[in-house]
Image 1 (cartoon, helix red, strand yellow):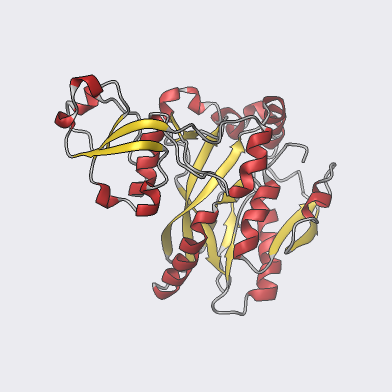
Image 2: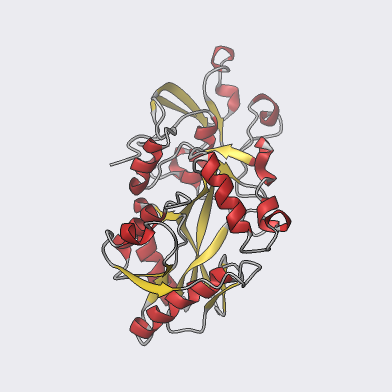
Length: 336
């Protein structure tokens, strides 16, 4: 509560997909515990953070406390999985069915860990950080009957033998909040890494995306549980419908449900940019696979994946979402 984390939204996004939620919680100095108790399925594990542990390792220590209790209660079940979220990470309801399918696929393929994709929101709910420093995917589901443990500053896990790569998205909102609260949060968070916050790699590294070329627009949908928070912050959560958009690409590559959600009254599909008349050049034109000359006439800053060396290309639907967002074109029915 003190640092305005999206922890309630994070927990609520887990409720529909798990039997119980295990949360290691220090008593702290605010009313966080009172708010957590309002959420069903949450089992609070009383804890005391050892603030003498540096380099961020206290975060994995606390994560493993919750994981240990989870294993005591469910670890003997061969088919039991644990899904892990940090307090500023939220799942999207549109991915619940995909998550279920991927858990089944991971079982069949003999995987003991599943990596989810990451969307790192930077300062607003409609800007994504894609610089090489940002992790594009991380393990967020593990087989409980394994020796897998959280390590370091709890960004990921160690001990897995085979990882399944999923398109389930983790919406990371850690850098979207009131600026005065954000500054206090960053300074105090940095103390977990170094006694002198200004020397913390974590503290200094988070300025890396001030270069706008490393931040791209996002006007796709957000998890339903985020509606109240986004409105409270007076942020943009839905764009008005545009009259028309010209998309140079193959519509068969995209799901019908996604295409029907594009917030444009008229959508024209073209096979080449040569089909665009001169008078339409100022209209909203999205070129999926740009040829050499297209890069000059239809410039785009949207990469096909995050810039990290380990990044995997975005799905066709999501890539088109980003290309449309660049032209300030959003999706319909963002919130139910």
